[in-house]
Image (cartoon, rainbow, N blue to C red; front, side, top):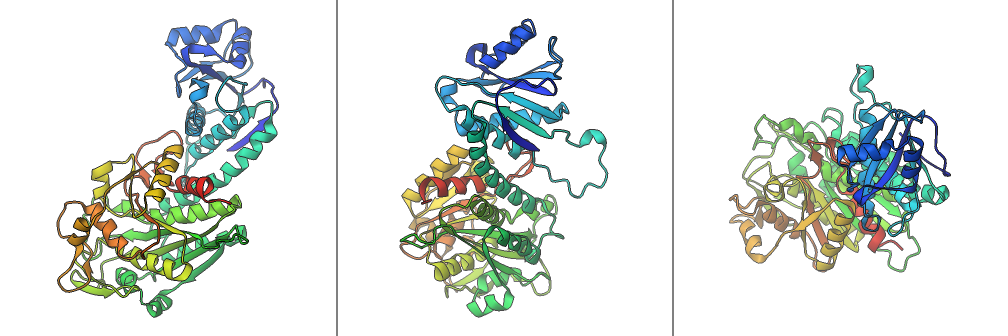
Length: 499
């Protein structure tokens, strides 16, 4: 779908979209159309008790006096209270409605409004939301009925300063590209997406200026990554360590990069600690953390972010076989710490342990944020509305929380302490990979990861098990892989760390 911007005019075909303020007050464009249609818009508002509340839609089909197919009225509430997220949600809802009623093109008539954001910023964010909602993953559908194929080709925003809107949208469009790549990776079946093919997709980003390196099994053995390699040893697919670098601020006084680390289990059977069969097909997106890191790096490179950043992804497949890791095995991590593996389905922390240590040893980063679909326990705690946040740094935690609220990818900080850490102490090794009980499962997983964070390094862990996938449509997120983390971390970078 194409998003475009043009000077004010009223097209004579396709759908027209206008705003309505709280209390059912028509914007100037809506008032003009109401006059042309001899009061049809006001009558529709009265008949439907349409209040102009933010997010409401009211469709007037084939209005008399116009050749257009419909006038879609969009509730905006109070303009001064409209946030960027609100505008993106409005754009997403518009795109969803137009797709549902099988429109091909639409024109949004933007007005100058008292208070709140300028028309150019409103248009750019609404366009961004429309693009995000337009995502489809249907590459494996060989037969589709005509009515199943989306017809919507273009939404054009008409406003006084289309050039300003276009400039603002161009940056957002690059972020959408990153979100779409993350959604694509999460949606691919495991027979298509495995460690080497995942890394191959990331290598394509070199055309954006990213430096991409991939470590294979032999290289990881030399580095002593016994924790990650133990997870992979039951699979026919060789593990990979994906390393992506973006040098957007090469002349900065402090060249230390921001580091983002992702869990990339391309399929998780649980290994010898086999998962139940029901729902196991969902474990194709157990690489959601790594997918978000790749999408973020694509977004940063695409919009030429003025920051130095590195993305590291531990890529493995967790399978049961004659060579698979057994419950009770002891492995030695790159950090030299030994781990008793009591449950092979608590594998993500084993992958991240070596990825985190490698990142610190290699890049000495300014901070680290890791993302992982790590625990089912976080879904019990927070449902599907918030990702779990664990951190050793209050400043970084506050920044992530604010960035999450701004874009609608919210996080909630949970506690960490010595009392929780003690639960993963082990009789025969330095630690065990589960506590042995059900209490505080997400917290003890985070405590495990913290043991691989060097003193003085600001670190945050995002458990995105409940937010990486959705079974229902949301304003800017259709069912499936959400791309959670890309917008959150892009906002973190641009708001607090970009030069």
